[in-house]
Image (cartoon, rainbow over all chains, first blue to last red; front, side, top):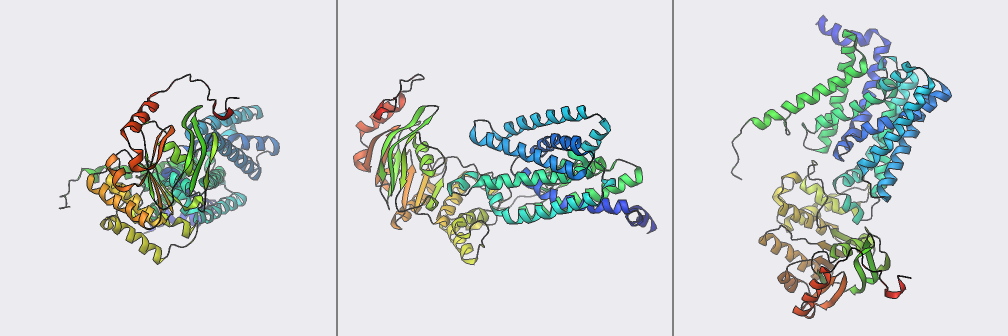
Length: 291
Length: 246
């Protein structure tokens, strides 16, 4: 049993930075997983990626103004992300451009501006930190941010769950009954940006998309109801967080990619073995019913 | 109940609905009849509020827009989502339950009764992805039953639906009329119009005739409708009706 103790427990028991990272990962999973699930259900799986690039110039401007300060960079990133979401939303609503195209256009604008600002500011090391983060270095401020965002996300989702789900399922119906679907959509995009920003310090802008999307996509292969998918995606995200941290500790791997790779591995296994449309269950020929 | 006043709706300045005036009689069923491209769906979408008219207006008398159920020609429902039949039907309770309100036992009963009315109670807990398109159309009718709306608009509701299902759903249209609801439906089957729709609007961008079905659907007027719709010029002259071109 001491083997289990050594492998799974003592890293967290012995080191405060590992405990912090664990709490950070679990809180991130709690907020990101349901947001990712709604992105998948709305066929906006690539939107998270677009938004993660869109936050860059805001963080860069904050860095230029305030130095390597997490609150400032988070706020900057949040403002830039929301700005892109609103502009893309307006363009979709009032012109002929479709939603995916207008998000692509605005995030590219934002990203190029961000890269320009970062390269003017000098050091590439900071850019790497921004893009990839380090969960092993989260401080109290970052933990509070992550926990706060997770709490806010769950509360908001609990309130707007019904209209948001209905709007994903049947937008024409929402319009016909005069419910303003756009409000829920925008509020939801706000949550996407918030959760990406929360993942900043821990995983970096690029990797935090992974914790948002991979568990959500995999969950569809396991559960046949929205509630089931929510629980499954959270479980996968949490498992990947804990497992990734342990891998990173024992094998001296960078923690962010380790976590996301583990989530990716769960997705690959789900593709093969999961009961709701996985590959192997499809190959097994069961006798059919009489009707 | 619903009056159209000199209504024009265009796509890139080409009118699909052109100077249409008239009103839909309350508590009866009106069929909208006409060739493809006659502006029938456009008219429904404008009444529904999804399209803005270039000029003219739609007025609701003694009814609010929220008291309206609309079945689009092609539903944009994402049927790959893991939602059960009964849940989809229950979304029709929206007006009573609101965004956040409780869906109580009497709502559940209403949903169940609606499913029984369309003969799909056995499918209540199955996912919507498991249904054929005809069965799915029945489910959408069940949701309209639950919505309990005073105005019901159906855009080609019987496309790709078999004869038995069409008959069953037409019974619902008859029931709605008896209950004093107003039904407006875009249809292409003359027999269905004659048997279940006392009123008809025959249109080809403009109103060809509007009134009692028997007097509207004459050979002469049908020919007129198909000829009007067939003409379309990429560079048509500007319309001069009531000084619009000025």
